[in-house]
Image (tube, rainbow over all chains, first blue to last red; front, side):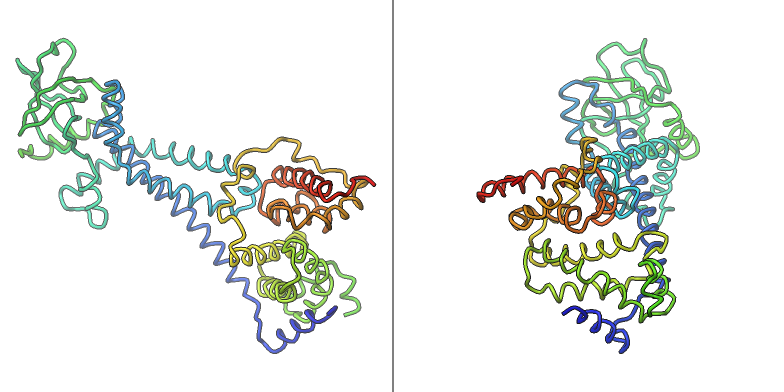
Length: 244
Length: 193
């Protein structure tokens, strides 16, 4: 038994039955692993930044400020499919990263939190940049191949019970609001609003939409960064107003 | 071959990588007994050991170009052995498929996990205990115990073999040791005598 294995293997090597894999194979495999991690990371940042953009532009982000009913609306409006895909990608990324010595020598929680922190921070920066708005606009104008359908389906989702937009004009019994998709709607309000609202304010309305009118049961001036909506404003000026 | 026998494992691996494939038999000779013992202890069986060990050495030869000669050869070959055994467990559905979800891999362990247990005084005793209780020990404790007490590798090396944090290795060895002592006592033996 002592030398059996050694002799058998030497014999097989001599006969060419077992062959060594080349160095190039392992270099290529390492490159593929690195490329997979980078692509996965970039795609995850893209997806998370899109979710953040979606939450902000649709107003879901601010719903919690309406109390319990707002939180209920928030939970039912979150883009769960995209969130589940993102979580799956984080787990996949952790799985790939665990092959790297620097990563597996630490508790998995550290690398998991590291991945989450890095991707969410990067996503926040990208989510607040004009990238997704530009892509959404290109998709609406039919200038975006490949991901155009994705933006048309998920970009600036419209909901039945709440609406986000920017005040465009104050009137006697209400005001006009421009939605992220460029639609102009009239908001009728019973409560006082003239002292608190002015054109250019980002606003979230709770109320059902009928045609181009919404009867607001509640409204909230959102603290959305003005620059975020300035792009919509620019789009409104550069393109003819949409009338649905 | 006589002069080659005096070379370190890493030097021989480099020679094999450079084309002196006949020197691979020296590595087989040096590790055959160790790998056989490791496989027998971890699998807790004598069945198919010969085939498993042969497969481990074939994989070692096939993948030898991926070995970094600046590092130690021993953890590298044990890593291959570990992977082969894990594959065998998977085929027989004996191992957890999601090791990342094990709490001692996911969460940080107590700093005590980093301190290697001083084997000196209890080494012989532990080997006796291991012979009695190893097959009743969970897989996740069995492997670090074998690598530490039988193969006499360091925590750092075991961490490289099992792809686990060093503190997790330490924690598993401590827990495994305690479990073995309990099994030993249950079997009616007396520890330390």
